[in-house]
Image 1: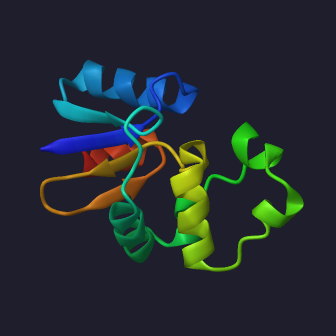
Image 2 (image 1 turned 60 degrees about the horizontal axis):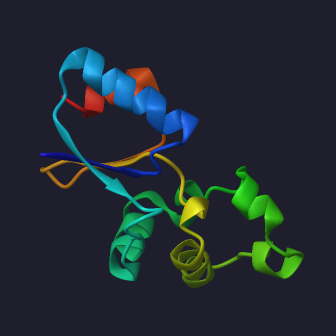
Length: 115
């Protein structure tokens, strides 16, 4: 089973949804704006992909943080920021039944990862 985490109204998410629809990929969607992401899952993602990969520093939510909040140099601070501000998690995050993790949307990478 493929589980896609993200925010429904995000443009990147819309591209991922369209890609899946065009190819008939069945997935479960987890909206982290509405449902949040448990700290334990964020820690596991950080261990698998790296917190710098997972932290969305280019979005408007991150840019609105204070300079002190943006000064993130450790995984624990990154996780705390992502727990408090779920929009600071890159999108999409895709988990497969085989325990694989993909962060971000690139059609070529998606094609090799999501089947």
